Length: 310
Image (cartoon, rainbow, N blue to C red; front, side, top):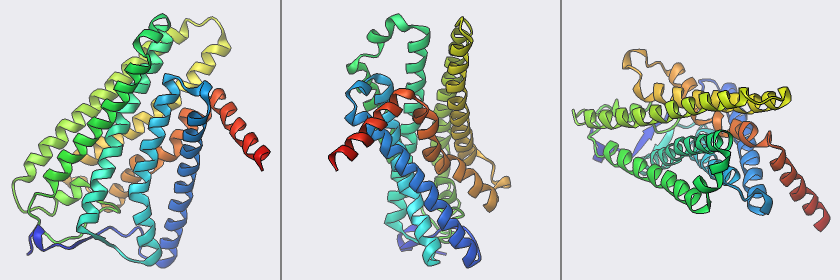
Protein backbone atom coordinates (compact mmCIF):
# COMPACT_ATOMS: atom_id res chain seq x y z
CA UNK A 1 0.00 0.00 0.00
CA UNK A 2 1.28 3.44 -0.90
CA UNK A 3 0.00 6.97 -0.80
CA UNK A 4 0.06 9.64 -3.51
CA UNK A 5 3.24 11.23 -2.13
CA UNK A 6 5.21 8.06 -2.90
CA UNK A 7 3.86 7.64 -6.45
CA UNK A 8 6.35 8.92 -9.00
CA UNK A 9 4.54 7.67 -12.09
CA UNK A 10 1.39 5.99 -13.35
CA UNK A 11 0.94 3.01 -15.66
CA UNK A 12 -1.41 3.67 -18.57
CA UNK A 13 -3.55 1.02 -20.23
CA UNK A 14 -1.71 -0.60 -23.18
CA UNK A 15 -3.66 -0.35 -26.43
CA UNK A 16 -2.78 -3.94 -27.37
CA UNK A 17 -0.95 -6.99 -26.06
CA UNK A 18 1.00 -8.04 -29.16
CA UNK A 19 3.67 -6.02 -30.93
CA UNK A 20 1.84 -6.15 -34.27
CA UNK A 21 -1.35 -4.72 -32.77
CA UNK A 22 0.62 -2.05 -30.94
CA UNK A 23 2.14 -0.88 -34.22
CA UNK A 24 -1.29 -1.00 -35.85
CA UNK A 25 -2.75 1.22 -33.13
CA UNK A 26 0.22 3.56 -33.53
CA UNK A 27 -0.47 3.87 -37.27
CA UNK A 28 -4.20 4.43 -36.70
CA UNK A 29 -3.60 7.12 -34.10
CA UNK A 30 -0.96 8.68 -36.34
CA UNK A 31 -3.40 8.84 -39.25
CA UNK A 32 -6.17 10.35 -37.11
CA UNK A 33 -3.77 12.87 -35.59
CA UNK A 34 -2.44 13.97 -38.99
CA UNK A 35 -6.00 14.33 -40.29
CA UNK A 36 -6.95 16.45 -37.27
CA UNK A 37 -3.80 18.58 -37.52
CA UNK A 38 -4.26 19.13 -41.25
CA UNK A 39 -7.98 19.90 -41.12
CA UNK A 40 -7.88 22.18 -38.10
CA UNK A 41 -4.65 23.82 -39.26
CA UNK A 42 -6.23 24.67 -42.62
CA UNK A 43 -9.26 26.17 -40.87
CA UNK A 44 -7.10 28.34 -38.62
CA UNK A 45 -4.99 29.50 -41.58
CA UNK A 46 -7.99 30.25 -43.79
CA UNK A 47 -9.88 32.21 -41.14
CA UNK A 48 -6.80 34.11 -39.98
CA UNK A 49 -5.69 35.07 -43.51
CA UNK A 50 -9.07 35.54 -45.20
CA UNK A 51 -10.53 38.94 -44.34
CA UNK A 52 -13.88 37.95 -45.83
CA UNK A 53 -14.05 35.17 -43.21
CA UNK A 54 -13.83 37.57 -40.26
CA UNK A 55 -17.44 36.93 -39.24
CA UNK A 56 -18.88 35.52 -35.98
CA UNK A 57 -19.44 32.05 -37.43
CA UNK A 58 -15.86 31.65 -38.65
CA UNK A 59 -14.46 33.31 -35.52
CA UNK A 60 -16.08 30.58 -33.40
CA UNK A 61 -14.90 27.93 -35.90
CA UNK A 62 -11.34 29.13 -35.40
CA UNK A 63 -11.70 28.80 -31.63
CA UNK A 64 -13.22 25.33 -32.04
CA UNK A 65 -10.29 24.30 -34.22
CA UNK A 66 -7.89 25.45 -31.51
CA UNK A 67 -9.66 23.33 -28.89
CA UNK A 68 -9.62 20.32 -31.22
CA UNK A 69 -5.89 20.71 -31.82
CA UNK A 70 -5.24 21.11 -28.12
CA UNK A 71 -7.29 18.11 -27.02
CA UNK A 72 -5.85 15.65 -29.52
CA UNK A 73 -2.28 16.88 -28.93
CA UNK A 74 -2.74 16.36 -25.19
CA UNK A 75 -3.66 12.67 -25.21
CA UNK A 76 -2.71 10.98 -28.49
CA UNK A 77 1.07 11.67 -28.69
CA UNK A 78 1.73 9.94 -25.36
CA UNK A 79 -0.40 6.95 -26.39
CA UNK A 80 1.50 6.74 -29.70
CA UNK A 81 4.83 6.96 -27.87
CA UNK A 82 3.84 4.16 -25.49
CA UNK A 83 2.65 1.94 -28.37
CA UNK A 84 5.78 2.54 -30.42
CA UNK A 85 8.23 1.95 -27.58
CA UNK A 86 6.15 -0.71 -25.78
CA UNK A 87 5.93 1.17 -22.49
CA UNK A 88 3.14 2.30 -20.17
CA UNK A 89 4.78 4.93 -17.97
CA UNK A 90 3.67 8.53 -17.48
CA UNK A 91 5.12 10.67 -14.70
CA UNK A 92 2.98 11.94 -11.84
CA UNK A 93 3.39 15.57 -12.93
CA UNK A 94 2.90 14.59 -16.57
CA UNK A 95 -0.38 12.88 -15.67
CA UNK A 96 -1.57 15.96 -13.79
CA UNK A 97 -0.64 18.21 -16.71
CA UNK A 98 -2.32 15.89 -19.21
CA UNK A 99 -5.52 15.80 -17.16
CA UNK A 100 -5.56 19.59 -16.75
CA UNK A 101 -5.06 20.42 -20.41
CA UNK A 102 -7.49 17.74 -21.60
CA UNK A 103 -10.24 19.03 -19.30
CA UNK A 104 -9.38 22.60 -20.30
CA UNK A 105 -9.80 21.98 -24.03
CA UNK A 106 -12.80 19.64 -23.68
CA UNK A 107 -14.68 22.03 -21.39
CA UNK A 108 -13.97 24.98 -23.68
CA UNK A 109 -15.17 22.90 -26.65
CA UNK A 110 -18.53 22.16 -25.01
CA UNK A 111 -19.03 25.88 -24.41
CA UNK A 112 -18.00 26.76 -27.96
CA UNK A 113 -20.33 24.17 -29.48
CA UNK A 114 -23.17 25.74 -27.49
CA UNK A 115 -22.18 29.24 -28.64
CA UNK A 116 -21.96 28.09 -32.26
CA UNK A 117 -25.45 26.64 -32.02
CA UNK A 118 -26.67 29.99 -30.68
CA UNK A 119 -24.97 31.70 -33.62
CA UNK A 120 -26.83 29.45 -36.07
CA UNK A 121 -30.11 29.97 -34.23
CA UNK A 122 -29.82 33.77 -34.39
CA UNK A 123 -28.69 33.77 -38.04
CA UNK A 124 -31.63 31.59 -39.17
CA UNK A 125 -34.43 32.43 -36.75
CA UNK A 126 -33.62 36.09 -35.96
CA UNK A 127 -31.61 37.37 -38.92
CA UNK A 128 -32.63 41.01 -38.39
CA UNK A 129 -31.09 41.00 -34.89
CA UNK A 130 -27.91 39.15 -35.89
CA UNK A 131 -25.70 42.24 -36.10
CA UNK A 132 -26.89 43.45 -32.70
CA UNK A 133 -26.76 40.17 -30.77
CA UNK A 134 -23.48 38.98 -32.26
CA UNK A 135 -21.33 42.04 -32.81
CA UNK A 136 -17.56 41.85 -32.44
CA UNK A 137 -17.58 42.72 -28.74
CA UNK A 138 -20.24 40.12 -27.92
CA UNK A 139 -18.33 37.44 -29.86
CA UNK A 140 -15.09 38.27 -28.05
CA UNK A 141 -16.83 38.14 -24.67
CA UNK A 142 -18.48 34.77 -25.44
CA UNK A 143 -15.22 33.24 -26.66
CA UNK A 144 -13.36 34.57 -23.60
CA UNK A 145 -16.06 33.14 -21.33
CA UNK A 146 -15.72 29.74 -23.02
CA UNK A 147 -11.95 29.65 -22.51
CA UNK A 148 -12.17 31.02 -18.96
CA UNK A 149 -14.83 28.49 -17.93
CA UNK A 150 -12.70 25.69 -19.39
CA UNK A 151 -9.66 26.89 -17.43
CA UNK A 152 -11.55 27.16 -14.13
CA UNK A 153 -13.23 23.78 -14.61
CA UNK A 154 -9.91 22.08 -15.41
CA UNK A 155 -8.13 23.76 -12.50
CA UNK A 156 -10.85 22.80 -10.03
CA UNK A 157 -11.03 19.14 -11.07
CA UNK A 158 -7.27 18.66 -11.41
CA UNK A 159 -6.48 20.21 -8.04
CA UNK A 160 -9.23 18.25 -6.33
CA UNK A 161 -8.34 14.93 -7.98
CA UNK A 162 -4.61 15.09 -7.25
CA UNK A 163 -5.18 16.18 -3.66
CA UNK A 164 -6.71 12.77 -2.92
CA UNK A 165 -4.58 10.10 -1.21
CA UNK A 166 -3.90 7.20 -3.59
CA UNK A 167 -3.24 3.78 -2.10
CA UNK A 168 -4.51 1.25 -4.65
CA UNK A 169 -1.42 1.12 -6.83
CA UNK A 170 -0.62 3.28 -9.84
CA UNK A 171 -2.18 1.38 -12.77
CA UNK A 172 -4.81 3.34 -14.72
CA UNK A 173 -7.36 1.52 -16.85
CA UNK A 174 -7.18 4.09 -19.64
CA UNK A 175 -4.69 5.12 -22.36
CA UNK A 176 -4.54 8.65 -20.92
CA UNK A 177 -5.04 10.18 -17.48
CA UNK A 178 -8.75 10.41 -16.78
CA UNK A 179 -10.53 11.32 -13.54
CA UNK A 180 -12.71 8.19 -13.07
CA UNK A 181 -9.68 5.89 -13.29
CA UNK A 182 -7.61 8.03 -10.93
CA UNK A 183 -10.47 8.01 -8.42
CA UNK A 184 -10.38 4.20 -8.42
CA UNK A 185 -6.91 4.43 -6.87
CA UNK A 186 -8.10 6.59 -3.99
CA UNK A 187 -8.43 5.14 -0.50
CA UNK A 188 -10.23 8.13 1.02
CA UNK A 189 -13.90 9.02 1.12
CA UNK A 190 -12.88 12.45 -0.06
CA UNK A 191 -13.29 11.12 -3.60
CA UNK A 192 -17.04 11.61 -3.10
CA UNK A 193 -16.39 15.34 -3.30
CA UNK A 194 -14.87 14.92 -6.75
CA UNK A 195 -17.76 12.68 -7.79
CA UNK A 196 -20.10 15.49 -6.79
CA UNK A 197 -18.13 17.96 -8.87
CA UNK A 198 -18.21 15.57 -11.83
CA UNK A 199 -21.97 15.25 -11.47
CA UNK A 200 -22.35 19.04 -11.51
CA UNK A 201 -20.11 19.33 -14.59
CA UNK A 202 -22.02 16.54 -16.33
CA UNK A 203 -25.33 18.28 -15.58
CA UNK A 204 -23.97 21.51 -17.04
CA UNK A 205 -22.81 19.65 -20.15
CA UNK A 206 -26.21 18.01 -20.43
CA UNK A 207 -27.83 21.43 -20.06
CA UNK A 208 -25.72 22.67 -22.98
CA UNK A 209 -26.85 19.65 -24.97
CA UNK A 210 -30.51 20.36 -24.19
CA UNK A 211 -30.00 23.97 -25.29
CA UNK A 212 -28.41 22.78 -28.53
CA UNK A 213 -31.22 20.34 -29.27
CA UNK A 214 -33.95 22.88 -28.50
CA UNK A 215 -32.19 25.45 -30.67
CA UNK A 216 -32.01 23.00 -33.55
CA UNK A 217 -35.74 22.31 -33.16
CA UNK A 218 -36.37 26.01 -33.71
CA UNK A 219 -33.89 26.03 -36.59
CA UNK A 220 -35.60 23.07 -38.28
CA UNK A 221 -38.98 24.76 -37.93
CA UNK A 222 -37.59 27.85 -39.64
CA UNK A 223 -35.92 25.75 -42.34
CA UNK A 224 -39.19 23.95 -43.12
CA UNK A 225 -40.68 27.33 -44.01
CA UNK A 226 -38.08 27.83 -46.74
CA UNK A 227 -39.98 27.61 -50.03
CA UNK A 228 -37.03 26.24 -52.00
CA UNK A 229 -36.50 22.49 -51.71
CA UNK A 230 -32.81 22.97 -52.50
CA UNK A 231 -32.52 25.48 -49.68
CA UNK A 232 -34.16 23.10 -47.21
CA UNK A 233 -31.91 20.24 -48.30
CA UNK A 234 -28.79 22.39 -47.90
CA UNK A 235 -29.83 23.50 -44.42
CA UNK A 236 -30.66 19.97 -43.25
CA UNK A 237 -27.48 18.49 -44.74
CA UNK A 238 -25.47 21.03 -42.73
CA UNK A 239 -27.40 20.91 -39.44
CA UNK A 240 -27.97 17.16 -39.05
CA UNK A 241 -24.25 16.17 -39.12
CA UNK A 242 -23.55 18.93 -36.56
CA UNK A 243 -26.22 17.56 -34.25
CA UNK A 244 -24.94 14.00 -34.72
CA UNK A 245 -21.35 14.91 -33.77
CA UNK A 246 -22.49 16.99 -30.78
CA UNK A 247 -24.69 14.11 -29.60
CA UNK A 248 -21.80 11.64 -29.93
CA UNK A 249 -19.38 13.97 -28.14
CA UNK A 250 -21.64 14.89 -25.22
CA UNK A 251 -23.27 11.48 -24.70
CA UNK A 252 -20.00 9.51 -24.68
CA UNK A 253 -18.34 12.09 -22.44
CA UNK A 254 -21.16 12.01 -19.88
CA UNK A 255 -21.28 8.20 -20.05
CA UNK A 256 -17.54 8.00 -19.37
CA UNK A 257 -17.68 10.15 -16.25
CA UNK A 258 -21.01 9.00 -14.79
CA UNK A 259 -21.27 5.32 -15.73
CA UNK A 260 -21.61 2.89 -12.78
CA UNK A 261 -18.45 0.96 -11.85
CA UNK A 262 -20.23 -2.35 -12.50
CA UNK A 263 -20.09 -1.83 -16.27
CA UNK A 264 -16.50 -0.59 -16.34
CA UNK A 265 -14.72 -2.85 -18.83
CA UNK A 266 -11.29 -1.97 -20.29
CA UNK A 267 -12.42 -2.53 -23.88
CA UNK A 268 -15.62 -0.51 -23.37
CA UNK A 269 -13.79 2.32 -21.62
CA UNK A 270 -11.21 2.44 -24.41
CA UNK A 271 -13.83 2.52 -27.18
CA UNK A 272 -15.94 5.20 -25.50
CA UNK A 273 -12.94 7.39 -24.67
CA UNK A 274 -11.75 7.25 -28.28
CA UNK A 275 -15.24 8.30 -29.45
CA UNK A 276 -15.23 11.49 -27.39
CA UNK A 277 -11.52 12.37 -27.20
CA UNK A 278 -9.96 11.30 -30.52
CA UNK A 279 -12.68 11.08 -33.19
CA UNK A 280 -14.35 14.55 -32.86
CA UNK A 281 -11.15 16.58 -33.47
CA UNK A 282 -10.69 14.74 -36.77
CA UNK A 283 -14.36 14.90 -37.81
CA UNK A 284 -15.14 18.49 -36.80
CA UNK A 285 -13.11 20.11 -39.59
CA UNK A 286 -15.02 18.10 -42.20
CA UNK A 287 -18.49 18.47 -40.73
CA UNK A 288 -18.34 21.99 -39.33
CA UNK A 289 -16.08 23.74 -41.75
CA UNK A 290 -14.80 22.04 -44.87
CA UNK A 291 -18.39 21.60 -46.12
CA UNK A 292 -18.69 25.39 -46.18
CA UNK A 293 -18.20 26.95 -49.62
CA UNK A 294 -16.81 30.23 -48.26
CA UNK A 295 -14.16 28.37 -46.33
CA UNK A 296 -13.29 26.26 -49.37
CA UNK A 297 -12.80 29.44 -51.38
CA UNK A 298 -10.55 30.83 -48.66
CA UNK A 299 -8.45 27.65 -48.60
CA UNK A 300 -8.21 27.72 -52.39
CA UNK A 301 -6.88 31.28 -52.29
CA UNK A 302 -4.24 30.34 -49.71
CA UNK A 303 -3.05 27.40 -51.83
CA UNK A 304 -2.96 29.49 -55.01
CA UNK A 305 -1.05 32.31 -53.28
CA UNK A 306 1.50 29.86 -51.90
CA UNK A 307 2.10 28.42 -55.39
CA UNK A 308 2.40 31.88 -56.91
CA UNK A 309 4.99 32.91 -54.33
CA UNK A 310 7.06 29.85 -55.19
